[in-house]
Amino acid sequence: MASFQYEALKISDRSRINGTINAGSEKEARELLREQNLIPTKIVVINSEAVQAGKKGNPVSNFMQQIMGVGAKEKIAFTRNLGMMIRAGIPVTEALLYYENYASNPKFRKIVQRIRQDIISGYAFSQALAKHKQLFDDVYVNVTKAGERSGELDQTMGRLTHLLTKAEQLKMKIISAAVYPIIVVVILALVLLIMFVLVLPTFADIYKQMGVKLPLITQIMMAISNALRNYWFVSFPILGFSLFGLFKFFTSSTGKIIVDSFVMKVPVLGDLIKHTQSSHFVSTLYVAFGAGLPITDALNLSSETLTHTQIRAAFKQVNVQIQTGQRLAVALASTGYVPDIVMLMISTGEESGDLEKMLEASYDYLEEEINHRVGVLTSLMEPVMLLVIGTVVGFVALSIYLPLFSIYDHIH
Image (cartoon, rainbow, N blue to C red; front, side, top):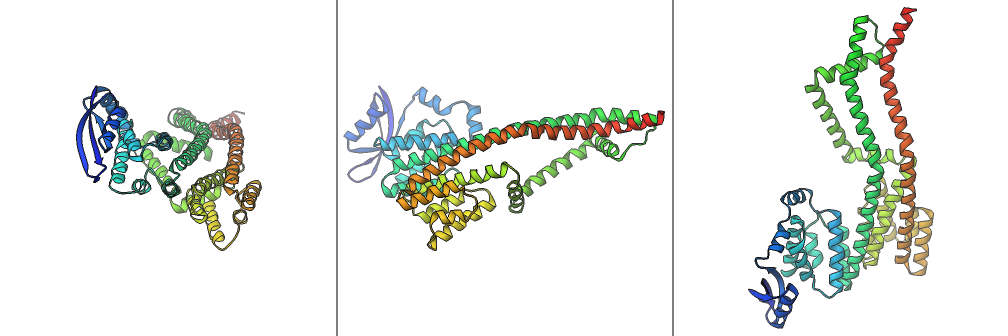
């Protein structure tokens, strides 16, 4: 038998009441309270070492979670489990109470606690979610709102779970494809640093003693080596600030337009970006439209999820054309970014009155195409990186050995 501290509402006048109750489990405690015409809003085990240990967790882990925030996997698990509990007939406040008491991430626990308190204060679930934009974006909030209005919140949470899961899987595929070139670039940078700091100075001393006239390419390399060795306290800060400045520029609105325009012209990568952005648009449209949002609102939300500046601008025009009476398939065709087979599926869905099903089929097709293109990009990555490495190493080697050829000519 354990003791529980509870907060509850009286069914008669909805007034709040606090107290303690003895029961064998939390479920039994809730049942006892309901028998007393009380609606439990919070139940906490008193002096339970297991629960307290679970809440405290590892101090290092808690600290890292506070810094990193709430991860995608936690958000997916929250959405999936919340939908299952609602489907089982558990009130939203009680489902949130479960997460408030047992979530391992302390930052997430605080957010869930505020959401539950806002609902008790009279806010709708979607309104409470909207207060936490850093975790629940406009798509999540508006789809949830549509689920509340239609009375199908459990199904809506299922759709959101599907959307979040697919988005996370796609993200991991892109990251996996980018790991190899990043590792190669880092190793190449370290090798070049070693050559500039340790290898080139040795050759510089040899050439100086022999009085060899250095070619321009070798002079440039020796100047870089000298700067890194003798003026490192100036060179490295300048290099760091330069990289930071480039990062800030390319993440600015102007820089992003330049980068987006460039990557679209890169073979294979450009097609992958087109399909990825189309997939984001179609999957969000499928979830939002299926939840009951008007097509114009669903289109607006879908275009907001896109990150590529040119593609987002093109898809925003789809909503404008729809409002003027244009069909969805025709409006999508005008963007130039949607594959023909997807437009055919959507056109069929419009004509048959089963647009939701065809949007789902379109998303499945785009997902398969993305998998194919990621595979092609990954297979091409190795020869491209080998070419880059060979070019850089060859350039450095040429700068070192050109003076040797000059010495050889003088000997003969």
